Amino acid sequence: METRGKILAAAAEVFGHQGVKVTTVLEICEQADVAQQTFFNHFPTKGELFLEMGRMGREFLITLVDSALDREASTTARLEEIFTGLFAASIDVGPMHHELVIEVSQGAQAAGLDEANPRLRDAFIRLVRAGQAQGDVTRAHRAVELTRILGGSLGALSNEWTSDPDFPVNRRARSLARVLGDLVRPRDEDTHPER
View 1 (cartoon, rainbow, N blue to C red):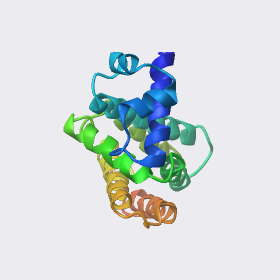
View 2: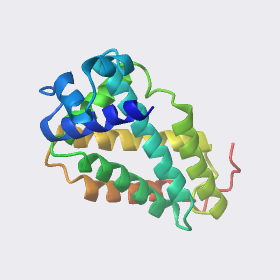
View 3: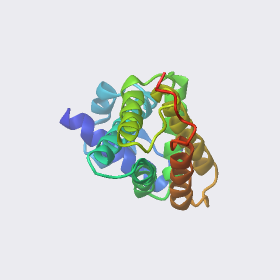
View 4: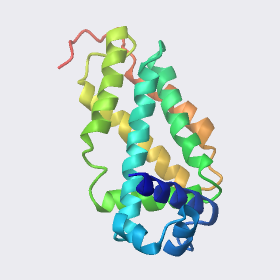
């Protein structure tokens, strides 16, 4: 696993600085200090590399959710922490981060990995249920339905950001988190128990 991790880290660095389309497997191997055959032993194609990077991105997002849940905070503050943390990590990859995020996202969608990732869905359900338990998320709707709204909104923000290099993602991530916090907040008329 150590070699695989070196290859993934090298790929992220090279992709982030010079872009996905112009980067060759040889350049990734040179950065990772491994032979090309070693690369292909771990990743038969460049597409397999993108799929693994997508899995790592989802694991990172799950970690952000769990970390936010470990702190005493409102659901809105937790959403801000998760959303801004996700995009800050993407930006830290390098100046060509947009191209990398697009490529990884497209690879995951082509493989059907974005549709039903149960661990990621469960992390957001835990977030919603924690908010319901502390009283700042409505119980008038099922946690899984509220989770779909959060996930869909995060996906829409990501799509908008990757299509516009000048998109103010940090500001918009905070703003979206506040909007979502308002949307899921209990209302006076919320008298229905969770269905």
